[in-house]
Length: 195
Image (tube, rainbow, N blue to C red; front, top):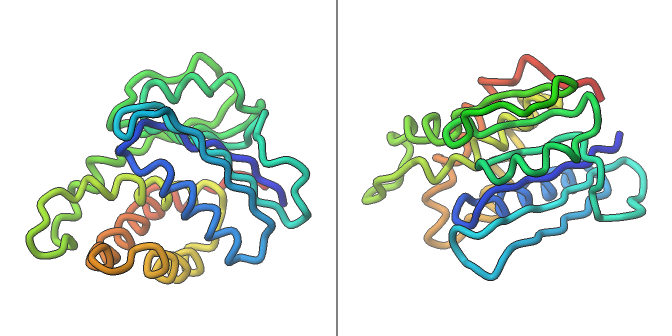
């Protein structure tokens, strides 16, 4: 199995975190992984994209030129649609992107990531008010769903994954993120992409 992916959006959406979590998940699964972030000089609002390659075999290049999967978190991310291989999968954050791609040879899955995350307020730590910050975790769950990861195994892995990345004060957000992944999995978990 080799999967080449692009995760794209703008600064502040957690795109780098999402791609990093995805890479770490595949690493924990025993796969070879390459993670290559790219972002503009702005800290919030600038274009952000990450290449993630996961493979059972050694990886010869960390650059993704014809991805199997694109996660488009905002409208400018749709600029990467032409790169998708025919038959590839486009995961669209329909909270921010309403139009579909002009291609008919792709599998398109629309995920209202911000709305789903915003509905998870009961898992927010005390004093926090905005659960929509977990939209990237919703997309991670949706991504697991379309790539055919075993749901039980993915759920178990993300708890450890978030405990690895969300430490100190951020540890209080582990339950929110785990439930956000679960919501993304529930949305798309029954429709895996062929390997």
